[in-house]
Length: 114
Image 1 (cartoon, one colour):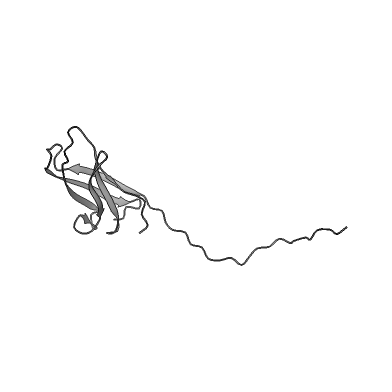
Image 2 (cartoon, one colour; image 1 turned 135 degrees about the horizontal axis):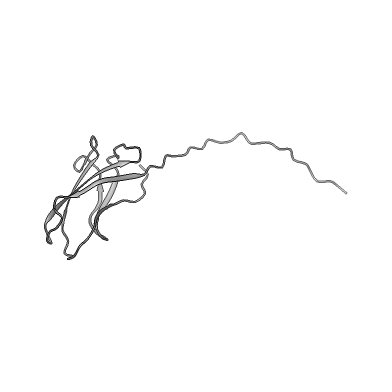
């Protein structure tokens, strides 16, 4: 009867693998130019938006502005027209939709690889 082969312990030479940094987004100082309005009015939303390390976000970062679940701005890039890289201040102007009631205006974004 043959005995089984014995394999000695060891390791391969390996192949390179790199991991990326996961960054959170922090929104503070949210404000509106007006806390009420009528359909068709323009309202300005401002907020300070930084990453978890207190750095400004890249111009290619994209977010939506919502009133409850109604998107009033979609796919807004944080370019120089709306985002100040030096202060991290985001300024978005939106038009009040036809809904009547009390709502929450908020910034919403998806996971992004930039």
